[in-house]
Length: 258
Image (tube, rainbow, N blue to C red; front, side, top):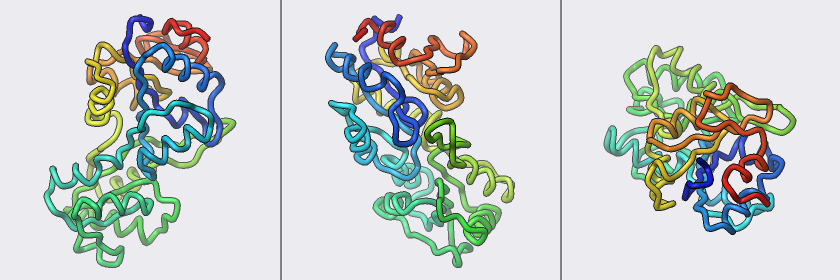
């Protein structure tokens, strides 16, 4: 099946790399796909970086050539505008998240002025404090909509280590407030459709390759893509259309063995 596909969309965190290290065989397989004329795109749920930064990291780790990567930050500010219009936004997350919100024309609300917020944007916040968490939960409980790049509970690092992910922060806010968030990134459709547009592929002509059944496989299936689960430790065969233990196995199945 994979040898007939025109395009491949790859997740980054946990699939192409772990922290600052490429997964074994990733560079060889991605290069082989490019040389064979197959479309390649990158789609990540990272809530702290734009696509250009992710592409630069790929080059730094030895993946060339590199197509522009897609992250939720590419569309985050526009989603807020489409759903709620010009908004007063309390941002719990990285400076990059606040920057895209402001660039879309929204007003950034200070933590101490949480009562003024009409939207709460929650990303992975490495400077999270109890004050910031409480302000976000109080604003949400008072009626502000909660919007987030993703619900991923962990950010994978090298050697099986991890950091709490964006989803862990969002859960804390939403459980305290008694609300549900609006999700911009995977598994919601918009970024998958953007990736397909960049590849010039219809959904059935491309595969989503990732390590998360919930966000990568679930999202890919929802838009009609073929799905490939990268699972070095194995997984049930019905977890995705195809389950691979390595990038070399993926290259073989795609007909670009190096």
